[in-house]
Amino acid sequence: MLGRCLSCVHLYQFSARSVCLKKLWPRLSEGVQWLVGNGNSIRFWRDNWLGETIASSLNYVQEVQKLLNDKVSCFIANGRWNLPSSFCRTLPTLAQSIHSIELPEEPSPDQVIWSETASGSLTSSDAYNALDPPTPGPSWCKHIWHAAIQPRKSVTTWKVLHGKIQTDDFLQIRGTCLCSRCLLCGSNSESRIHLFQTCEIASSLWHWLRHLFRLRFPPGTSLRDFFLDNLLSSLDYSSRLLWYIVVCNLLWCIWQERNKIKFDGGTFCLPRFKQFFTLSLRESVRLIFASSSRASTAAPIFGLLGISPLRPMAPRYIPVTWTPPPENWFKANSDGSFRDPNHAGFGGIFRNSEAAFLGAFSCKAIVPWAIDTELLAVMAVVKVARDRNWFPLWLETDSMLVMHYLKNPSRVPWRLRTRWKNCVASISQLQVHISHIYREGNRVADKLANFGATNDNPTWWDSIPPFLLSSFGHDYSAQMDYRFR
Ligand SMILES: [Zn+2]
Image (cartoon, rainbow, N blue to C red; front, side, top):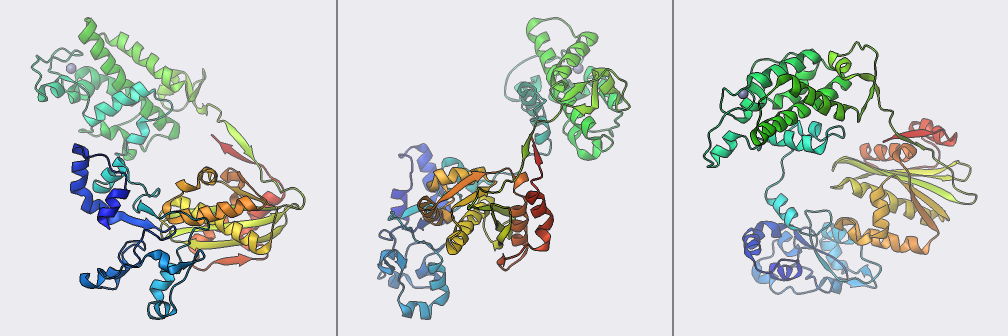
């Protein structure tokens, strides 16, 4: 199978990169699998289309395997599985796994997919991540990429904290011969730690700022530690946000000042630098804090900058209300819930034009990705509507990705691709309107999905269950929710 897969998977022409990929192919090939279409290209016993080959799961020796050349299409008739009754009798578990694979209603060829990604395709980055899984970034990362911190300041902070800023010690390690001198104090050689932290100038600036925030740091605190929650526990939310902004601005200003002196000449002047730093800081804080001339009881830095910690910029919001469908229409809201692959579920509720309860369901799911639960919810809604002939149907989902997959079914995660294509094909023949609603307006379905994630058995309700009463009443009385942006 491997040789045939190599010809099917999109590999680059033989270049240095493809030679490297070829060496790593045995590891990557473990994730290669067939997605069943018409079954004409897949060998029933010897190819991997169930997670492992049937021949190896039954421990057939190689000599026997070579004799087994039946195609999967031999076991399909009129678009349905047609396994011999003797096979189902002797291998019931295997037969059940095969029957659980949905066949496409419209003829389509078999596909080779890489099972370790949702899309089923193998890109260079997927291969790299599979061979060297990414580790989560340090905790300070999320604080430096903030809307109130200009990207140029975030990038400089990122370089300083990662040790990638081109101070003299950085260049010397890489073989540049130079005579190093700190351009702030003029009395030491320049290193990253010296310039940004231990230099008497930098140290006095940090001391000044800590005083303005009423912060005390233990000796030996590093620049990275400036973002640690336990050192900032005395600060409230606004002060902590302002501290992150201050740190990024000071690091950026020191680097700007150092470069200005290095390339334009001149000497360091503390009052001028403080003015430059304050202007830079104001440029950042005005993006999120409202100005205030009144004295504040918060950290003195707020008074210095003339901003109020109690008056952040008014957030923008969108009103969201659940609305009943037009007369004679049915309306369904669906949702998925995903904490991890073993705590996932989906659910849906049906209501009529008077917002009256018609029925609801919830179900547990064991799936690898959150989007799977959203897709399963939509497919379950369509199935219920078909069984009960609840059409015309207006279906609401809070997943933008589901809306995207309705237009592009071939991009759906490969595990659900065939089922989704069949569902979309049936929707196109029925009177179904699908729209998006923000999750603030989809709370009933959200509760049902959460119920499904924590209960093993699928459930159907003909009357409102007690845990839905408050959310249902909220929708029934057309109360408004707000989505903050
Ligand atoms: Zn210095």
